[in-house]
Image 1 (cartoon, chains in turn cyan, purple):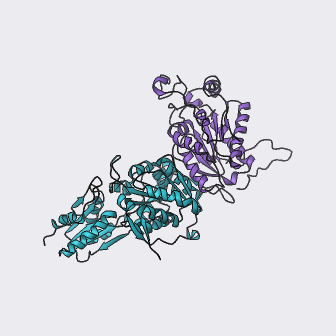
Image 2: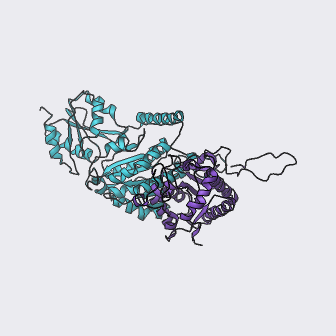
Image 3: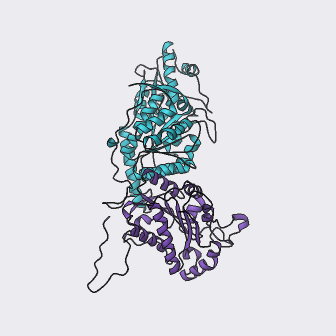
Length: 351
Length: 256
């Protein structure tokens, strides 16, 4: 397989097309403009639909419509745009419509800036929209992994009928790396959608709804959703461990921060500090269990984020005071250097 | 879907019946409400064009939220105001479908104004049924964008003051100014001759889509006796005397 030098945003777009995305709806926003432009250029040439909507709200509702029609569909945006999509995302969760939403996070709150940040973790993993729902949230830390996780996001979203989000940041979107692109998905291998709205020919009508005015009915709908979420929590937790076996301090970081964390581990080891890293790949379902196990063996679990400490809450839930759980974060789109983090690590190791 | 069989006793001839595209579920509309008329007319048109098996309807938020129960075709329920965006997604994903939205005035002309204007401007090949009854029905009779000047609603208890709340929004006139749409018309449901005209307009609106002609919107001026706190007869009279002068009937845009 040949490798291609690609920008993160473009690799995500190309992988989306190869995953079988037939309809892509968007509204332009930095720092993911290349994703939109790539789709505009490529998708119509490959039997797909590209449409620039009048708003993020419309774009996500076009995704809702295309998903209801039974095709693989996606949208992408960045933080403020994702906030606007939250209404539609909640409806999709309720209506059990599969789709992929890409968030190339930027600094916030408000308009913030277009520098890399991880301040949308709560929004992605804890709700964001209204109601008791979850998204499958996958966080790549390199451009090749972003391409790989897009394919996985479509598969998982189809399998569970739960919308999936790719949570990346401006650094990943903009950076160029060699990528071995995944082979295109065989359309025949995409699961059938007997529930889709294809016209009631030779069958009873299908309906796609996110509501039930009868409390008992809505309770049952919610119960089924929660059952699906439990199943996902049981089977779809993904993470990477680096040098955790003998570690005296374990870092927990995802995405761009996870990548920097790997360098920190290497630098620390060069200085004789036995550092390790847990990199959550699925942010929901969160890898509570692996972190719980590791926390029984190390005195310090240091969380690193490009935020004020959002995933940190999940890390502390996993550790449950078995180890100390300090936090190191940067704000506003500032990205720390590995050396800065290394000096933070040194505060917690006695050697 | 198979046609509904009705047995007709010997010696009788069937002169009137339920359209095949309507289910036998009773509607949830109030007595005297024109939604029931509009719902039936759309079903008749779907039958007449023979498109039941490829039609997907979009139910709004509001009094027509249960439309999916009343019809015998595929249906999706959209968030308030988003029907034209959902319709766009459905139709672009599968152009073989006949996609129609059915929306009230709050849905289409307030919270969904942007979705409506831009779907029309793109000339999306969809059909929009727009019920203009000048009030929010299901939520309890609040002011709609189409509420008339001076009209009493639960949020304009002293009558709509145009100085602070603006004027009745003439969205069909607005849309008719655009290059994108194919067919924009306003009809009324207050008596039999007008119902017949409304049916013809709906037929054109759906036929346009079947022929790939583009965006059609059929506005139907209707009344809401419950929230107007009037008898159906009085509400009908009010429609003719008060609503129609503000919303004149007829074709606003027809493009072949």
